[in-house]
Image: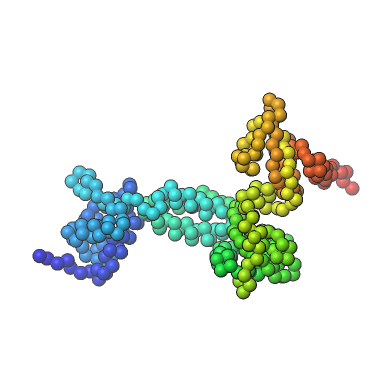
Length: 337
C-alpha cells in the first residue's frame, strides 16, 4: 500500500478542504475531484482520491452538507446547506446598509464579514447590493461600541454615566449643558425610525426616558445597581413607540381621528391592527388612538393634506389650529422694505 506524500501544510488539510468548499462551491458551482486536488496542492497539501473520499465522510460526520453529483463521466462536489442561506444574508445586508446609525466604514466591514458566510460567487451578489445605496449615514463611529457598552451595563445590572452631545453650526459635536454628566439606569435598547435609542430610568425625575445612542459619549459603568425595576416591568415598548412621533415626547392623550377610507392602511401602519374602525359615512371613518401630543404629531397630521384630521378632544383640536396658524404666520407674504 502506498502512503500519501506529505505537503508542507499537510496538517491543515481538513481546514483547507473546509475553506475550498465554503468559498469555491455552492448550489450552482461545484468542483471535480481533480480540481479539489489541484487547489489543495496550491495550498501546500497533497491528497489522493482514496483519502479524499475518507475526508469527505469525516466532514459530513462533522456536519457539513457535502454533495456529490454525477454529470457525464465526472463526479462534482459542492457544499449544500449552510448556517445562512443567500436570501437570509441579503436581508441582513439590507438591514446593515440601510441603518443610519451604522457608519459607511462599519457597514463595509460588517458586510464583508457576511460575504464570508457564502461562496465567493454568492458573496459578489451581496457586494452588488452594497453599491445600490447612497443614503446619509451617521458620522459617529463610536455608536458601534456604545451599543456594546450599554449591553454590558444592562447585563451587569449597573447604572451608567455619560455625556450627551448636539451638533452646532460648525458641524461639530458639543456637549449639552456644558458637559454635565447624565446618571441613568439603562434597561433596554430600541431601534426606531432607523435610529438607536437607549431606554433608561431617570431616578431624579422618577420616569422612563430615552436617549439617542449616537449622541452619547464617554459612557462609564457605575458601581451602583440599576433603579426603576418596577417602572420598567410595567413599561410597554411597543405602546411607547406607537404613541411617540419621531421619538419626541408629549402628553399622552386619546385622540379621535376622522379619515378618508383609503387612508385606513396609513393608520394601521402607524398605530397597528388593533385600532377600532367606525364608519362615519360612505367615504369616511373614525378611530381613536393614543398619542403623545407634540409638534411632531401635528406635523404628521398636516403632511396628510387633510385626508386625516383631528376631531377630538377640543383641546387637541385647538392646539392643532394654533400650530397651523403659527406656521401660516411665518409664511405670510410681506412687502420687502
